Each structure stands twice: as C-alpha cells, then as structure tokens.
Length: 328
Image 1 (cartoon, rainbow, N blue to C red):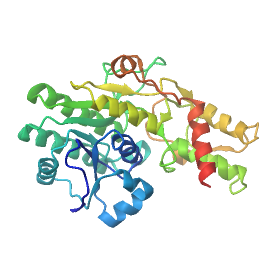
Image 2: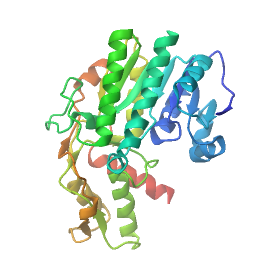
Image 3: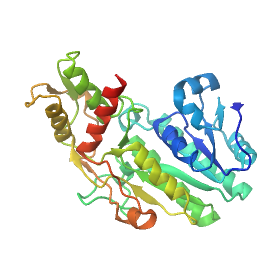
Image 4: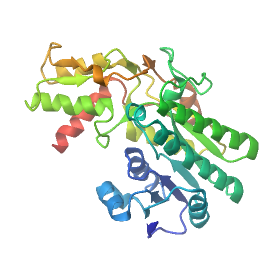
C-alpha cells in the first residue's frame, strides 16, 4: 500500500473506495469543493492510479494506491484517516461481465463492504458509510418503478452480489448500530464510462457510424427498458444522502424508463439516419438472464433529500454524445 498525502487535517474527511472509476471521480468533484479532504483508495499501484485518474487526481487531497483488501488493512486505514464519510463505489460494476466472472463478482462486491462494516463495528467510529448498491437487486420492476421497500429479486451474479452486500449492511445497522446507508443506483452514465456499458457503447458506435468508421451497431436485446441517468447528478444525490444525520436507504434513479431500441433510434435520428438497417442483433450479446424492465421510483428520495434527476431518458444519450463529440 502506497500513500500520497497532502490533506488539510482540519477538514472533515471523505474516504472513497473505488476512486479511479466514474463514480469515484464524480464524488471527488463534489466532496472537495464542499470542504472535505478527499482520500481516494485503489488496488492499482499509485503511478497507475494517478494515470487512470488523469486530471481528476487534483480533486483528491490524498491517494492510497496498491491497497490490498483485507480486514486488517481496511481497519488500519479507517483508524488512521478517521473519516467523517466513507463511500464504497468499488468492485465489479458490469452486469454483463458478471456472468463470465461470478466468483470474482461476489468477492469484489461483498468482501470490502463487510470489512468496512466490521471495522466500524470494532472501532465505534461514527463515520457515515454509504454503500453503492444497484437497482438491479429488485429484478423486474413495475413501470412506476421500484422503491427501497420493493422485493429483492436479483437475476444476475452482479445483482446477487449487490443484494447480499446490501442485506449484510442492513444487518450491521440494525444489530450493531453502524451508521450505514444503501444507495440503490440505477444506470448512470458519463464520458468516463467505457463500452462495457451499453449506453456509452451506443453513443460511441453512433459517432463511429456517423464518421463512417463502422457500418452497423451490434447489440443484444433491444426490448429491454432501463432508467438511465447522468452520473454527476447521481453522485450529487449520494453526497446529499451522506450528509443526513441518520442513515437512510435511498433509490437514486431518473424515474424514466426507455426501451433500448427507442434510445438507439433516437440517436440514429440525431445523426441523420431514419431507418433500422444499421442495427444488428448479435445473439452472442444476449445475456443468459436479463431484466425486461428496471425502473426506479424517486418520490421518497425527493422527499428526503430534495433531489430529482435533471437529465433522464433520451437526454442522457444526447448529453453523452455531446460530451464525446467535444472530446473528439
């Protein structure tokens, strides 16, 4: 484990596990201007961590690279930093990839969560711990969306791992009084996402189609309905959740379900293509188990933290394509 220090010890500290991912970068951009010292944690060696973060590295007051996830290291880190807030956005985040790596997914999304909870139990530190769970844990949802009290019915290794970790957190909170919350995050994108996620893949493929670099978009099922949002907005909601005096679980979602096929056609119209000929369904991309509809209900979240997503539905793809075009 290698640390690079430089934080103001008089500021409250936010500890971010999974610092180099999309959500970790977005969180640092929110917590640092709010007056927090932000400590970013990654399993990558420190030079690789700094390279992966790029310009976002400056939003962290300290970086800890080469972090080995085990109970002793997690407790030692939390004891040393004494954070006011701990956010866990680490682990396997791709539903599709989880089918090929189920054991890795269960370990990645379960162990760190347990180790943080156990460290908080043993130290008695009153840090507010927020675990990034997923809307996938609810399985098929009604069109009106799933809320925190909806049944848990996971259908993928990823969803099972997040569901199990969420139940462990609930137990630690109820039995041991650990100050811990669950953020049930529905899909949220930004240019920081790669093509392992379908909407960034669609956006990049549409721009490549427009430029003549490819002849068609190759996708799996087009009839799935998802509730897409904009990652920086979702991380703002998580930030607000972390400021609550008492831990409250929240669904963080756009509240708008859009069929993937409709999203693709919207993007094609944007680049001047009015028919479906460039869309090809690749059977190899169809998952062994997939949800038809996954939508989040956002009313309780609006009531508790006063937040609603501004960017939902087709606007997410528009914003993603705008950002990618600007970076090209």
